[in-house]
Length: 168
Image 1 (cartoon, rainbow, N blue to C red):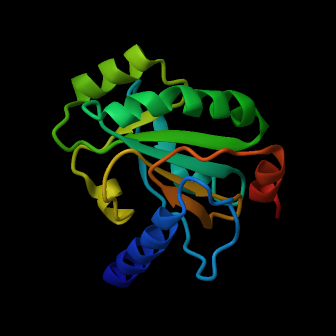
Image 2 (spheres, one colour; image 1 turned 180 degrees about the horizontal axis):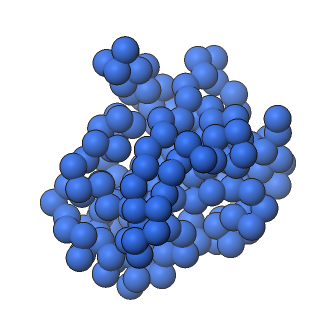
């Protein structure tokens, strides 16, 4: 089951990568559910993605401290978090742990001014579950927990798109 889910997620990821920069956030033919995970953010506070499914739209941002593109995405992500976090969208950063350390991840998050919680994936398990092919990778799921975007750039989220993500 795990292999089938990973293969399906990888297939969906490949399809989204073709249109990552211009694709609207819309329903997929094959609905792929967000994969829940638990952990602690870089400040020691608990994170449980399953608590958001059915309650909030979720944006996962996979990154690494050595990634120049990850650094340039932070202001865009902070802007989206500022606009939508207080209105029911959860933003969670995940340092992939590859060629990185907790200390570097925490310093990077502080230096770049990330305004959303970040988790350090020391084993790479979370990134593996999501079939990562590189960083940054952004995954956006609607309120029901279905992935609506998977790509290597931060998409533009309009008010209309936000409403679609939050729809029941």
